Amino acid sequence: MRTGTPGHLKTFNYLGLHRYSLTFCTNRRRPLFTNPAAVDLVLSQISRAATENGFAVVAYCFMPDHLHLLVEGQSDGSDCQRFIARAKQYSGFYYSKAFPSALWQRYGFEHVLRDEELTVVVARYILENPIRARMVERVEDYPFVGSLVYPLADLVASVARESG
Image (cartoon, rainbow, N blue to C red; front, side, top):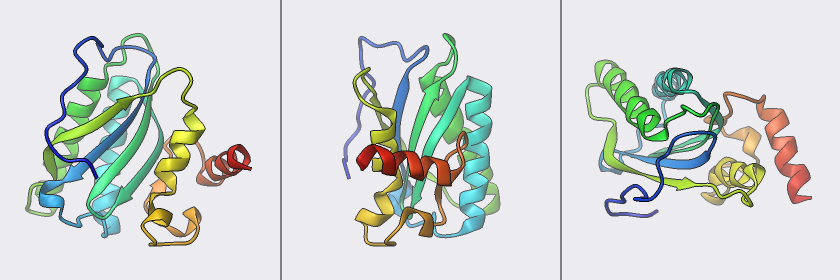
């Protein structure tokens, strides 16, 4: 996992119909995403921020100490920096109310997908994290992966078709 304090791209405004791969690490890399109630609470606030800021959450994976997201702007006004700020703010606030501790590290990581980068390839990388970590043998066996756009079975089938 990358470390340090990454900055945003200086020549990119993060507005519009772009796709992003995002990673947020938990505070002190503690394994906070092993509890279904914590994952559900955080996911509901990520969903809230996505709806408010015009983003589709194409894929997500809650690993024990970090979260991967693949998001896509749905309008010219979709602002990824605002989405990230709100997603972390909302989820951090409600998490601290339910589980009295800080949720996120200050910085996260984002990658703006280029036109030639296929959404399904990035989705595969995100969904297969638990397999690479040897936590499960199949994506469907991990409880904390999915999409807020597609049924998991459809997303997994798309990933399988692309790699087959």
